[in-house]
Amino acid sequence: MNKLIILLFIIVTGFTFSTLQKPLEEPEPVYIPESVQRTGDAKKGYEYLVTGDYLKSGIPLDFFSLALGKDNKNFLKREGLNASVSHEYTVVKAKNGENVVAPNCLQCHAQVFDNKLYIGLGNTFIDFTQGQKLDVKRFEFLEKMLQKTSPKKYEAAAPFITVAKTIGPLVTTPTRGVNIADRLAAVLAAHRDPVTFQWNPTAQLDIPNEIIPSDVPAWWLLKKKHAMFYNGFGRGDFGKFLMASNLLTVNDTAESREVDSHFNDVLSYLYTLEPPKFPKPINKVLAKEGAIVFTKNCSKCHGKYEKPEEYPNLLIQGSVIKTDSLLYKSNYQNPQFVEWFNNSWFSQGDHPAKLEPFDGYIAPPLDGVWVTAPYLHNGSIPTIEALLNSKIRPTYWERDYGLPQYDYEKLGWTFVKKEEAANTNVYNSTLPGYGNYGHYFGDKLTAKERKAVIEYLKTL
Image 1 (tube, helix red, strand yellow):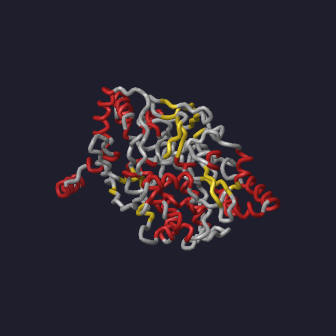
Image 2 (cartoon, rainbow, N blue to C red):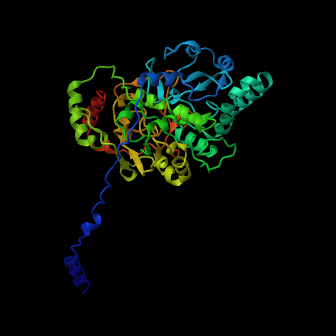
Image 3 (cartoon, one colour):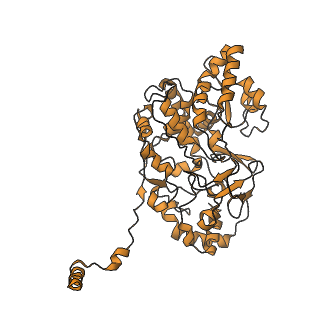
């Protein structure tokens, strides 16, 4: 009798036991619609980027020079006072006329590679480990010294020192080489009024404990993208996002409007940036084979690079990409920061910006990908070879920050596998947000196919 009932059920419903084994369909990628961007003068944009006063407070020049000495490289070929400071800083005049040294955008968005500075290449040498960037004790010492010896210099430096002392303990990482841009933005938002940008010494929003690391996308990719950031949630006017570092020292939104008036020029300059060409010989036959493999397996998400080029601007669901989810999930777990931005000065006016969270990551363009190691949104994988073969990804790995060496065959930083994270130069992929899993698409390729794809990526 039971067998008869089962048989009738199968006949009526069409159900078979293979139905239970049928895999669920993967969610389709989500297209990001284009946002109209402002245009401007690229030449003026470059000048403002490397000499502009988008941060109007900093360390008094004489104290800065005493602490760090003169920079003799002058990669930017700047003149005057800026010729003596690193490309990561700019000498500006504070409101009271004092010369101060302020950090600029190139701290995160430029890197020296093979003794040449590449503007737009994410800085993977940056160090936000304890006491390296915003050491509270140093700022407290400087504050007391300036208050006693030079009230005018203190007046010029006070906005920067005040913010640095507050955010310093909240933006440290256990590993060198990762960026804290999301964390910095959240901490600044917690202390600034969204409408007036007035600083509040007490956080007005809950700040989560975890500090989620990220890599820095190359600026030359921006011209192809319809949204900013790895999770693609930066929509609308890109200039508003680019000038958000102004929150470090801003006094009010009138100052922000003045700074914003230059960032259409800055964006126009960024659109002129091109990735560096691969400097070594390329096996053209192997690269051609790799192009075929890439087109078949990778181009749906990452685009096509033969003319006419195509980039699809797709967001990939976390359940598909399977990479560390902490970054995109934080936008949902901490909606107070998204709400702050979407109700702030940034979202107002005739060129507003807004944040639109998504449960996944953007599949980025791959122009110049050979030089952008390490890989994934958190910089957890040292080479493209390991990106395409998850079995060889190191759990702990260390590169030489003093004398960095690049592997032009595996495409990435020469590294040493470690048994544990014994120091801050060791990347620890077991930490929350630092996972090196996911993006398993290369695993299905043969060793020969992976080698061909790597050779092809050298041509982009």
